[in-house]
Amino acid sequence: MPSGEDDLITRYFKPLATAPGALGLTDDAAILQAGGDDVVVTTDAIVAGVHFLPDDPPDTVARKALRVNLSDLAAKGATPAGFVLTLALREVSEAWLAPFARALGEDADQFGCPLLGGDTVSTPGPAMISVTAFGRVPRGKMVRRSTARIGDVLVVSGTIGDATLGLAILKGEGGPLDNDAARAALIERYRVPQPRIALAQAVREHASAAMDISDGLMGDLAKLCDVSGVSAIVQANSVPLSEPGRAWLARDPGAIARLVSGGDDYEILCAVPENRLAAFEAAARSAGVSVSVIGRIVAGKAAPRLVDAGSREIPLQRRSYSHF
Image (tube, rainbow, N blue to C red; front, side, top):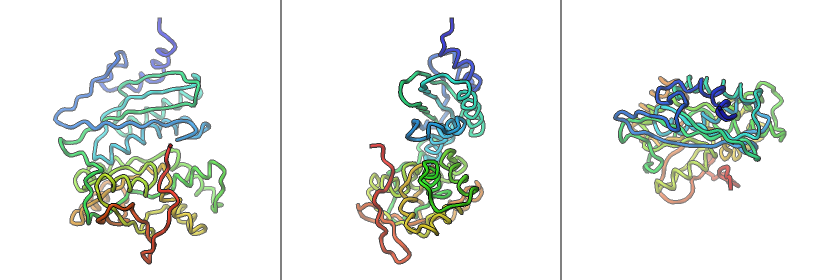
């Protein structure tokens, strides 16, 4: 006789498991065919009250859970191949699970990353969704953090800081914006990241090092520099901001430190050799992804510096979000 867990899986998640290797979620494992490629593996968990608010819409929670992992794959130059899901819930609620599963299936289809399997458990604590995603790259072509070189140009995709401002609005911390549309756009950026899968090939072909920005631009850049044995300089006035982000900064110039150190951007940070920059920018345009040059990799072991138009360092109380 099927258990409650079996019923839950059959009802909400078996329809998502369309890949042949998922075996219709009838087994304890799945099959992922790699061909001649390397398989790239990444995992991220999101927890209620930490990565999303307990009253966030369930469809946005599902999209965020998958997309933060797709962002990692994109930064490695990988094409999505599939994912497994662990879902820990306090209770089974049709009103929550139905839109969650529907949105998860829509994103799995949109990004070509089918559900392969997973686990569902109950928890007395906050809800937790953990995704392990798999991607493919040609053999030996995964782009690492540890291979930035002195003289490389620093490039980021999209815009920085929107999610930080969106979370501030949701938490009732106020802010200088009185435009409802602008506030809604920032909240959407916090709830639903935009993984730059379309940029993966350009990253793979032209970047010497890359990672996604999940904990804050300056903090994640520091991680890349540390493992590469280099430092960096970032021009604050070159950091790309959305229209709402620019409006916020215009009314609160000191917010630049918050924008570059807050988390949840899920943009790609690349170190690109100068002689590959034009080709990278052209590939990004073809992929429909905006990219901006924000600085350069330099010699040294010091933490990356954020500087103003006069090359004066802008002090940062913190460089990134940290769980501990």
